[in-house]
Image (cartoon, rainbow, N blue to C red; front, side, top):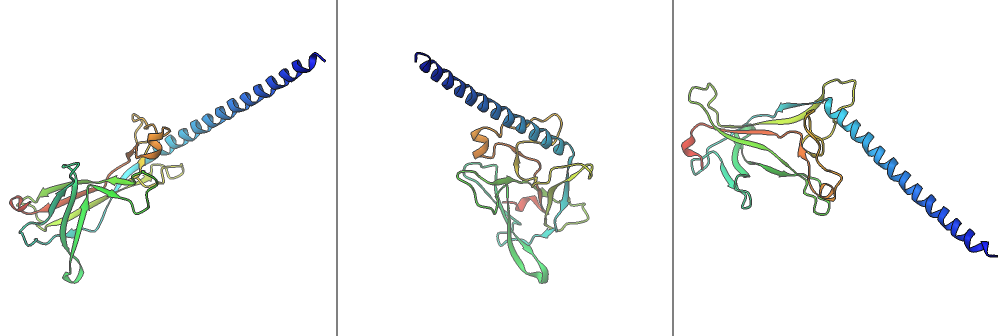
Length: 205
């Protein structure tokens, strides 16, 4: 009769120990899975190289104010913004266009997650001795391809903010934290290179 409480306590302890052991084992297996997944991602990144593909060149026409483009800086970040211009398409049709340093993705955002990517935009005055004096916008889109096609490589969008970066001496960012989950905590693998070429620097806004 006196052994019944002791048996109950032993049974309770045994159940508690079993639950703790199961939780520890689950955490260990989860961490091991994350570690293996991270190793696979790093191996894929090591077998990935960045290449640039040229987009069709867009010819610029002079605006009514005599300039070839208008730069509109963002209020919060004056060094970034949007460049508006007009291009000549087929059959000499004038079409307004623009490029932005920061672009939003077409897919909807989740909660406060900002799905954006950054472009590398420069304006260059065409040298008077260059053969091609055509005002134009040239865009090199960054893409990725495998170094060895027989091995896994990164197959996602290189514009995405990734927690892994190409290069053996670069460490990944902390994507496991809440800030990494709800924001673009990582960095792009590469940026589109956009060059606005104009013939005369004096008419730039």
